[in-house]
Image (cartoon, rainbow, N blue to C red; front, side, top):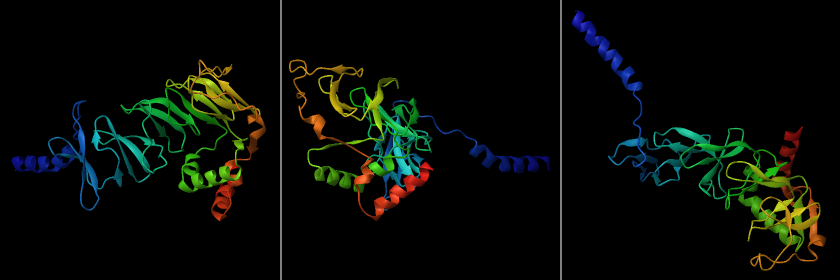
Length: 276
């Protein structure tokens, strides 16, 4: 009778023991490989054919081979996962509806409240989420916005926004349109602010200088934010400032003020309610 009770007890414990087993830890040289069925269900298996990420768990996967982290989308948004199928952080979607592109070894991540930071390809958050809007890194620098609304990417990355923005720019000819409500600055890969957010726009750096706009004036700045004079020998890939450029500047009350249609009217009304 005692033996029977022991057997029954072990049978009862087996499911509990299996539930508490830890997942296999994959080493740096062990990869996961995407699996796709004819019914468009996605998952990942290891080199031995073991399914690590079950088919259909995520709606879409964007990484063919997971070496460190992979990008997937499912309920609640797009995520970065590790090789143990643990969700690490939410990603910022790119304009093509996939995950954000990795630039300079870093990818933008976001909180559930859409505050943006950066993570590396080991899945570590290296720049804490604190930006309403920030662009990907280019040559060690990233532009960040002061005055932008949190969740701005949901609007500006839509195809309709880009179409209407180009339409508005064409309608204004060679006029340079600047949003009076926001300012831009730059951070380095440590997350330090190296150029404060005081500029209406900062173009990409070429020959270590960038065209910037501030207080109704165009100027060249270096990577510390200091104004510099154009020099054709030092900056052969830049052009001298157009002497008429300041007369072509126009400040606007946000790009949506230039967009027509019921859809954009609804967006503007929702933004107005959120400010109250």
